[in-house]
Length: 158
Image (cartoon, rainbow, N blue to C red; front, side, top):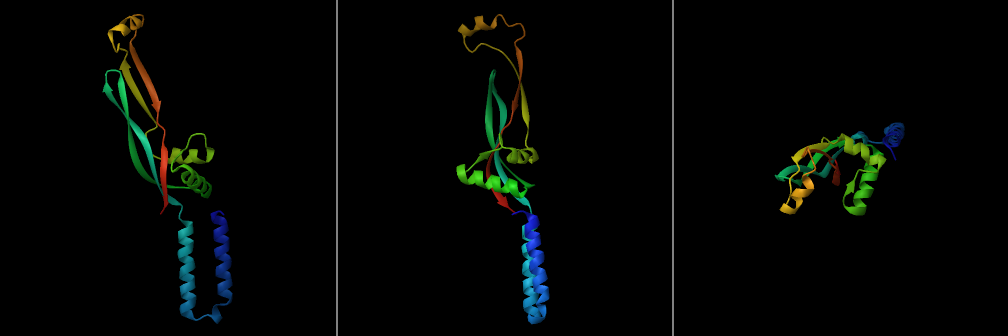
């Protein structure tokens, strides 16, 4: 059920209460109105705290790079369809990736994560036997672009 349906149901309920407000005492009418207003504000809030894991790459040797996982939290807006899909995936596996899922790919785009890392290095032999295999390479430098992935591990409505 999307927010338009919630709004319509709340509007109908408020109209029905307004029709019988003469039969209610003012305290009860005020309490019901305030409760419905609180419900409306709660349902109208589409902000969620997303907890996800991404990676940071660092040089750990001449031809070695290490991926260091990082846990991050962000507050973003989700549509009802995104939230439903995300909750379903989290219940199945306790985490979810956004790749190959059109609904969840929008979440990945809205997170302010680093999208890629460019790594630069020089081909060097790891041992003496490897030296011959690198002798034919004129330019021993290389550039590598690594695209970061994310794994969502939590979602909480604010």
